[in-house]
Amino acid sequence: ESRGVNLQVECDNDLEGYFDADLLGSVIQNVLVNGCRYTRSQLLLRAEQIDDMLRISVADDGEGFPEEMLRNHEQCIPGEQGSTQLGLFFARMIAERHANAGKTGRIALRNGQPLGGAVFELYVPN
Image 1 (cartoon, rainbow, N blue to C red):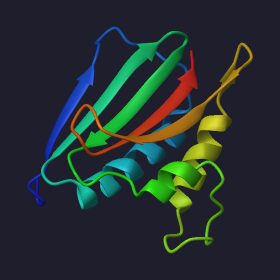
Image 2 (cartoon, rainbow, N blue to C red):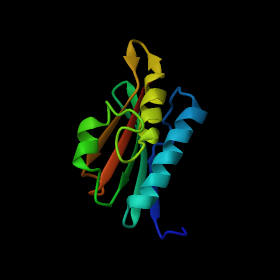
Image 3 (cartoon, rainbow, N blue to C red):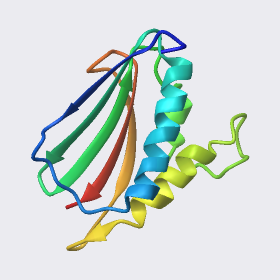
């Protein structure tokens, strides 16, 4: 509210998932804080079932992720670039620690829909 950001939350009331709430909560909190920093005025937090994965995403209406970050976020090692990218590093590690039925969690970054800016996606197997 202090930054004038409108947060919209979309989640089916019947949605269920099995995950470490503290770890995933810390990732989502970090993404929301960064989203508030880079958005113009809107954030969308969405949770949904995609096949056998739970997807939690945060989207903004800002400028989007830099192209280099989109290309290299999976290989980032903290301290290699101008930003420490520790948040992405830990998000990736936390996602990968969630495994079920041969599937492993992951993160994805992209730009575009639904709000036109950056979109962070966290997938954990259900």
